[in-house]
Length: 378
Image (tube, rainbow, N blue to C red; front, side, top):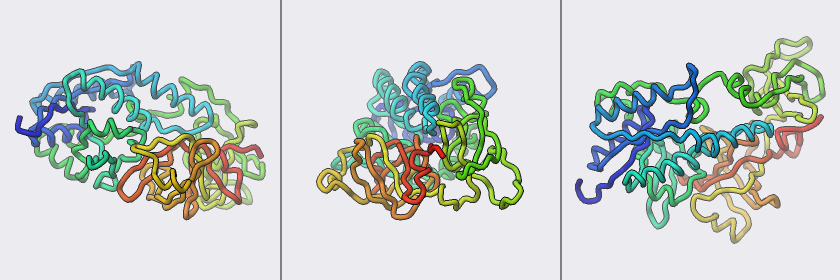
């Protein structure tokens, strides 16, 4: 190895992104080894763990680098999946990818990589790290693939030990490099669905762990318009799978989930994407996590302006952030936002820098208090 080169352990999933991350590090002259994680084992046709491991082995053979394999199934169930189920049982819609990054990829994986002699770890995330006066997390160059939203709960100390080789690359360039190297995964479909569990019939899967109680779907005025299979299966803003057909004296606009009345086991639905019950002026988070220190403006002035995302792929929204009496943050949007969902995350940005964020506890609408928590009795 030349000067400045490191022993780097790449988190190799068996997909194209992590494969090209390894290629970029090899090109730079680093001593590269791969570590493949198994975090979910299920004996059904939806579990891709065995196929992913085979793909990882072939990638490492083609690139001439060693492959290590570790099973973190117990860690994943305890640190990620248990909270995932707990959130659904509370009537919320969690985002397990965020916890998976914090607890697994930049937690137990990082520790295990050190045991293998790694000085640094690398992943195929589309994000960047700036190691200036302090280590900062920045958005990936490819705006369609930027994954900083999912990384906001990871601390700066972990990022100090991390490289994101794809952060300054477009996805099209990543696939082109994989093809040039003759890797069979160059056109492998991106993974979707629940982190490490994959894409599968969601209701069937969730029903194996939680029992949903069927009930009525009703309008805010209390008119029954259909049946639901269990409140846990629905999320605010959901349009598909509501099972509401054409109604007499009704419009032809589609129906959306606006709230959950857990006390009476009723799903509150409205017609039209622009219905006022689907829009919020602000939100409240639980205790936030800052990648570095809390913003100085919040500390000194009790509020600061920045931008926020309340869901992945959403455009940044200008907002005012202040402390809330609960110990979390109060966020006021410059313009109302659609389907703000408890259990998801509010993630804060200044320009390209991701500051951190916190779980959404409640949405706020002055005109429509029914959306206050995503659940409201009629």
